[in-house]
Length: 373
Ligand SMILES: *Cc1c(COP(=O)(O)O)cnc(C)c1O
Image (cartoon, rainbow, N blue to C red; front, top):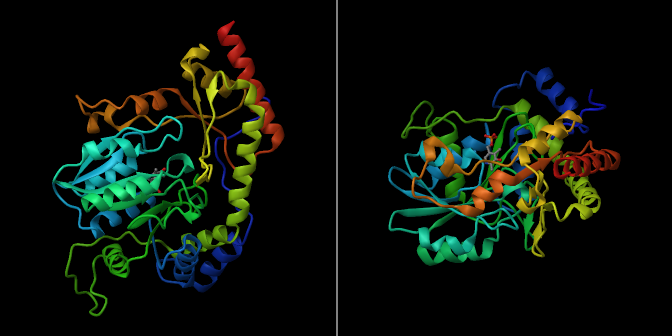
């Protein structure tokens, strides 16, 4: 019998969420018109330090819109880490473009800039940098490579709202960036997404594509094939309330990460703990530890034992090239494979207490002791 249940993630809805949703209901503005959409877009642009933010229906549709707006189409290649969430590569495939995988760095779990140039071909159009688990990619070398080869840079910042790189926010570092507001992300709208960019023409193109491609000056005239990827006013109402409390969201995650860091110090022979580079501010979407093979524990067994103590965890993502739909018979991404096989996402959310973290750390120690006895 578990003494308690600690979920791996949990939204914090402690601000104006209810008041703003009530306003949507009271004004009947429950669909994709209403004041919250533009307010949430404006607040997101200001927060990220860019001129334009465009809300949409999910992080996945945000990625699709970003690629479409950049003109990425059939046969084009986009360089993307093998170790990512499937939405990054799915969106590339929606455009009939080709995801070209690169391996990651073991310490940051993000794409390894040194591996990018070897993957560039005459068909390469863009590099998609994924700030995985909230850790920003080392962007300066990525941007330098992109400039040298005339490539676009897309940030998949779905997990990194509020993270920063050399003092600049995730979402302001490339040509266009995307965020997700799924229920377990840094801030949530239930389902939802956002794009950010400094480029007014790109922003206009994204808005067009988001709303069926309708000519902004001529109703029901559609000069292109567009999509309905709009966000509702209700979602934006929740998002704006979340963003008003962004410091609480980020600081509570940072506090949890600090507790893990302290209480897992004596387990450093078992796990690699997340590292924050001097130039990075991690958003700690997921506090991810990587089980060391020499520790003599099996990852899935450890996760099962933790589940028996009421501690929900998640395995790290499988690398993309092991999925049948993205399989690369000759692809070899050893770091991605290592991280995918040994990574564990520990509970990371605002409602955790230090006692919860002590409980988790204690069970990790006990599980490890039992497994290696
Ligand atoms: C969550 C996530 C997405 C997709 O966002 P949805 O809102 O679920 O569509 C894309 N990329 C990464 C890295 C994610 O974690």
